[in-house]
Structure formats: structure tokens, C-alpha cells
Length: 218
Image (cartoon, rainbow, N blue to C red; front, side, top):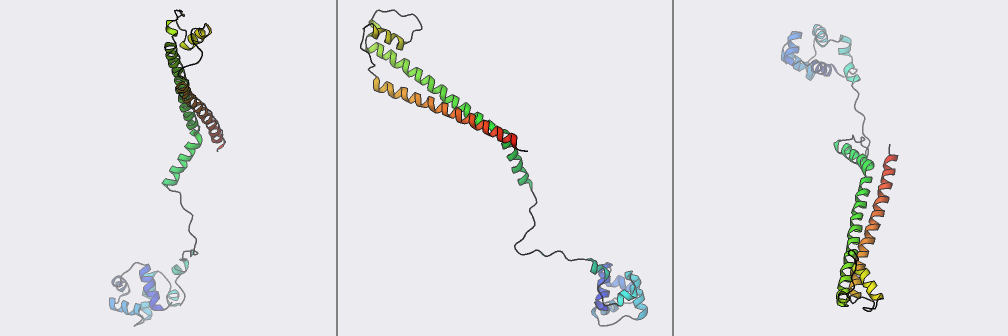
């Protein structure tokens, strides 16, 4: 590094303006400008004043090597093409991690909820089957003349049981006049009942699986 470059480097390193450096050395600002441009060379006494102003020796000021401060500043490592620094976890990553831990810990509750919804289907199917059976039994009894048989049944005996007893007594032929319609509604109720049972079993199995899997996580 040439002398003019050294003067410019050390002046900026010391955070001095040309006017401030000129005042310390005892020259004009134009003289400092000429030194830095290489248009003039400072005299020996001015070299000593420059060295004192910069806090270095005259040998370092006159040497062609790099200044000590410049040698200590190592350039940042070059980044190879196609590589990048590893991503720093942000708030989104922390949020997704928290959600994942909650799912692993309490996900089995989803299986419990599915099983409870299946119980609702079972209840609806059972009530529908009982209701359709009682309705068609009563209608069959009325159409087949069971109501006028004169036979008195205790309270609480269902129309289905009454019809079976009266058929055995010979008051009306066996069978229901609503066979096709009754079979359709009873079959529909049975399908709801079976679907509910399957949902209960699936939800219970899912709850057990997720509970065991969640407890295995660290």
C-alpha cells in the first residue's frame, strides 16, 4: 500500500476530517488533500506529526505492507452456489410444533367424539325400529279386526304381542297387510342401527390407537 493510501486509510480509521488532520499536523487542508491524492509527499517532520496523529510508527506509515487493522479484518466466508444457511425456527414453526404436540397428546379425544356420534345413530335406529314396529302392529290389529275380538289384555302388552296371541286363537290370519311397507321402514331403521354400531366400534378403536401413540411420543 502506497504512502498516500496509508494516509487516507489511517485518517478514516481515526475518523478525522482533512481539516482536523491538517490542524494536528500544522498544514493546510489542501496539503492533506494533495498527500492523499499522491500529488505531493509530506516532509520528514510532517511524517512524524502524521504518525503521532494516527498513533502508529513512521516505519508502519512508510512500509508498503497492509496496515495492521486491515490485516486483522478477515473477509466473510464465501457462500457456495446452491447452498444456504440453515433456516432459523420462527414463530410459525413454533406454533406448528405446539399444535403437533397437542394433537399427539389429545388426539384420542377425536375418536371418543366419533364413538359418541355413533351412539346417537344407535339410539335413533333403535327408537325408529321400535316405533315403526309398534305403529304397524297397531294398524294391522285394527285392519284385521283384532280390536273387535272382545279379548281384554293387561295394560302394557304391546300390539305385536296382542296380534300374535289373537292369531293363535284364530281371530285373524297370520301375517301383516303392510308386509312390504313395514319391511322397508324396519329395514331402514335396522341400517341406521348397524351403521351406528360400526361408527362406535371405529371411534373406540381410533381413540385407543391415538392414545397409545400419543403416550409413546417423548
